[in-house]
Structure formats: structure tokens, C-alpha cells
Image 1 (cartoon, one colour):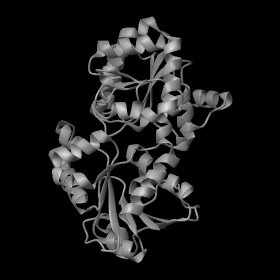
Image 2: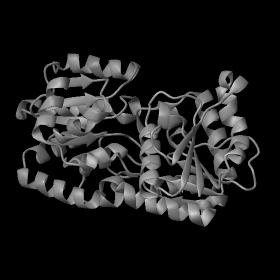
Image 3: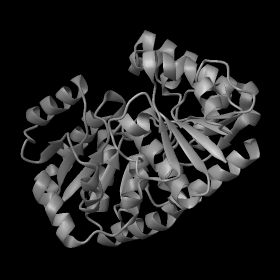
Image 4: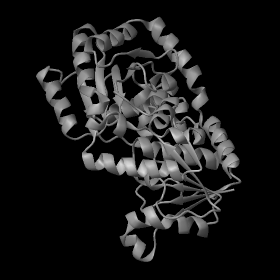
Length: 372
């Protein structure tokens, strides 16, 4: 089978959508090597797939090199037909607007509808762009993949006529998180990133929806009762500046470590060295950092409701993360109880085996075959 992907974010995005795309493509190429995989991208920032024999890369040529947005939005159907595809998979909420070939079946992954559920986090123009792209993609697709049951429910609420086109296929994470790490590697990364000996970890963008201000407030309530520090790893803009200001106002400069640039090879050790992972996001489509932490033998505290129990399983701790007191008590309870931590680690590790790349690849291939 010849399968094509919208690989823009696989080659250019270092965070959520990029991680999803890279993990999915790598898993399929490894576990189903007899297929041919064609990656369509307007540009390449990350060199991830060039040396795989069953993967080829298509970029715009001629005038389209100067109109990359047009190439990706309107010209890809012609490229799909030229490549002899059976399936084209839009990995990040969108499919091209150009007329698709009847011989190429289209699949789209919808990650979330946060622009509809929490419009206050988006500008008016961005909301309208997202609504137009996602609506078109869902209607044009032969099959819609929702990354969680929560996202499936959100799509049905918005576009009920499309319910029968939606399947849930969970995400995986980079295989590096699923492998043990020796003490030398842990120490190397601790030294490189100037990490404390013991720390609570958050990984992700530092934006308002991620609720990091409340995490800092919660940590300030237990800071005098623990020797565990707080590490916030991720990029951000104005909201991150607010977080830094709050850290200063609370006198936590020596207890809170903020890290921006982290190389991908260092991420597994960053997780493994943590005493606790906290993910206080208001809303997500799934939450890859949760399964990265569970694969890394780290107990997790996250937000109750929504998609979070799907990612975290029954032995993750769920609290109202908008309540700083409740979040503080949850962190304190886990940090002070070693037997509870060990139980959460073991049961969490058992639960996330369902998200291993080979399991996800098998489900995707079954879906592709049924569509083709």
C-alpha cells in the first residue's frame, strides 16, 4: 500500500503535533515495512526520515517553492495522484482544499476542538481559520481519527451527521521514553540542564490554557514542607513572563527552575529524574506528556475530567487543578508516601502498554486497510 502524510509538522514542529506525526510515521515504517510511505512537506527543519528505504519525501518545486501555503492547501491532490497513493492522511486537523482524486482515500486526525470549547484562548481570526479548516477536513475525509473518546464526543456534538465516520485511535510517544536509562545518562542530563537532585516536573508549552500560574501557587503552599523543587520545561510568550514574575513575587527563584531549549535526546532523562509529574492543563485532546511520564516510571497528577483519565489510567491522581489548595495537597500526599508512589509507578506502567507504538501502528493499519 502507498500511504501519504501531511508531514509539515513532522519536519518542523518540536512539540505536540510534531511529536504525534513523527511517532506515528516511524511506528508504521518500522512495524509495516512493506508499505511505501510518502511525506509531503513544504520545508524541512528536522532531519528525521531521510535514511529510511520505505519513506520518500516530496517538497514543492518550481514556483510552488515560493507559494508553499498554496502548494500545501490546493496542489497536494495532484501530488497525491502523481505519487500513486492509496491513502492520504492529514495528521494535524486538516486536509487540502483542492479537489481530491477519487482513487486516493482521505483520512484526517482531529486532535481537539479547543478553539470551540475555550474560544477565549484564541483570536477571532484564528478561531475562524481553524473552524473553516477543521469543518472542511471532517466533511471531506473518508475516515476521521479522533485521538481520544473525549475528542470524538466533541466532534459529534459539533458535527453530528459525521458520527459514523469517526474512529478513536490513541497516540503513542517516542520509543525512547519506553526504554530504561542508566545512571550515567541521568547524571549527564542533570548536569547539562542544572537540574536539582529532586524535582516536580512539568513539560509543555507555558500558556494560559496549561494553568502554570496555579501550579506555581500550589507549589508555594508546600515549598517549606519538602526539599523537592519545581522544574518547568517549555517555551512561552507573555504568559510565561507572568509565570516568571509570580515566581519572583513568591520568592521562589531558588526553588523553581525554568528551562526553554531541551534537545530531544535529553527529554527521556529529564522525565526519569523527576519525583512527580504534574500536568495541570485546563483542557487537551489527549495529553502525550502524561504517557511519556508513565512510561518513564514517574507518578502523575493531572486535571480531573475530560480526556485525562484516558491518558492517565486508574492510578493517576486527578484533582481540580484550578484549586491551588487541592493541587498542593495532592502533590504533598504523593511526595510524602513512598509506597503510594511505587504503586502509582507500577500500575501506570502497566496501563500505558496499550499506547506502545506497535499497538497503535496495528490499529492504524487496520483502519487504512478498511478505508482503502
